[in-house]
Length: 335
Image 1 (cartoon, rainbow, N blue to C red):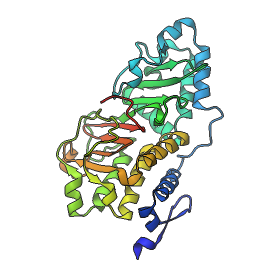
Image 2: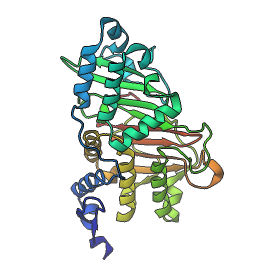
Image 3: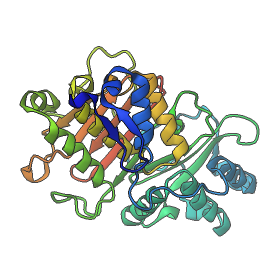
Image 4: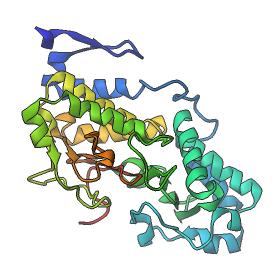
């Protein structure tokens, strides 16, 4: 029987039993971990010499009194929990607050919390969308020297976080946002968009569904794009339960999650995967596609969503890409 076969990860060579995958959530975790290493060329970089957290502390120590007035905020400041694809966390951009050496520290923080492939994509996105990283804004919440802290960068199509595990049970320290708009109104296939590969993978899932599954997975209208709160005990979720898919179909869903997490550092990827597993693993997820915003009416769905008790991935690809990741054991945003 096909379900007794072993599946070999093409990158790491690990064998996973299809039957065990279906029966045992531990096997799901193993496959997720395997997938986290299956990166395109250039995606896995050598570990940076300094962690993002140590670089945030270095930046904090370098700030003058006047710079701290602008960039250092209380831990409970509501801006730490805000989710938006386009906003400035403080009034002045990096280039107007920090000197050249401090600006380079910010670059190194971004490098340290991303994969090699992700760093290249994110730096290109920032250049295309807003003229480069120094036009973005950043802030430090709390005190990196003595307690909870979180560094956050925001701007057009980007929210990045480095939290030193200050936010318990929450991957990345809170929701993160990414996107890209080589053109505001993109064409089918999103030429030049650095994140469209994720939608290509998601649409492979849809193509693998049978007719009845497609009817359940395809919905007319998407929820608001920033509606990414963790709904741990929701009775209903949009779309098709992943638990009802075959082993091969589930593997495709896992690859979508792998691709979504690929731009970020290994530490955060593994925390996100462990948090998904804590919420019931892949079988607790739902996947939905939306007819709304089908660019070119080509039935390559530009808007889609994966949601479970501890994770929300929302991808809005029309008219250009805005996307959101929120992975946590409980809601940190409020309903």
